Length: 393
Image (cartoon, rainbow, N blue to C red; front, side, top):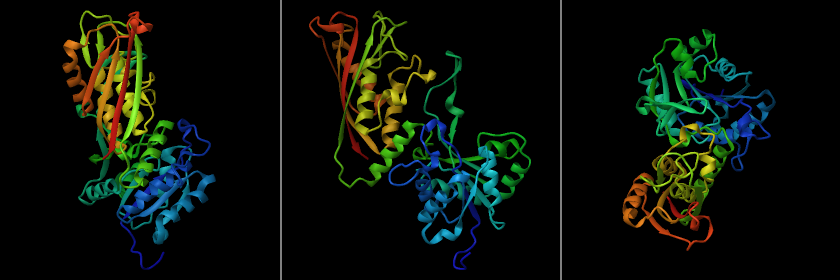
């Protein structure tokens, strides 16, 4: 090692050995491109912008050379701090391989998933600071904002109190002796290193995570990462963006009608996976389209049983979070309802207030009929059309 680079007290093990089957790509996930660079290369940008550390990358055996190329590009003149080792059949085996390459003088080890490619350097700094303050194990987390339901098959069993729930992220940090002992005594596979250490009887503390530290697992996640990277590279003064959304639902659902975020007692309900609120769904499509984040099916598909029966506020609040995480702020939304019923005139202001509160941006609602033409004119259902404006934050 070069004598001008002091031996760091921190090591970061970057796990990049997964196959990424759910991503559906031809290459292992860490070696799929976000832009001109791979997922791994972007992850290493954050790693090398964090406080100085030894960096051990765990890659598939067939990709060790590619990982080393990415590492040397990201490290610059700190390439002496980098090594690459081949991973194992499981994540736990891969982390163990990385730990075996950590230098003897290292006191603290962070384990980071390369799939969390856009994790800001500040998250690494928070984890390291917590360890240096005397914590044995540190986990970055985000509060859970979704409504959580316990299900049995396709049936909802009960709501779960989310007040005590958090979403775990990486890098997860540990006192080196604690992590080594936990791995030496491990008899079962665990979902992450914090769980393994906790199973060994060690208390795990938390620090704030970051929305940008999301894990690239599905094609929608990869598209989100590409959008964020593209926006970061865009010139200053980028113009506002406009999106269009539409939705249609037929009458014939169970229970009461929900439309424009309001319950309409005495009116026939709409059929849908959630509550069939065509107005709210059109708004979601318009806002996501404006931000370049796909559509409602991308983020709120029928494969999410917790959204069965969900109302407008759940969709709009989550949509706002997605858009803000992508670097945009919602300017305003205009939505028009086409239906013979219900009559909106008396409740327009109430609907606008409910939608605006959930979306965090002004929503204007108008309503019309089609003079008896088409399925809405025949009273068979409701159509909604929305236009949204978003601006860079």
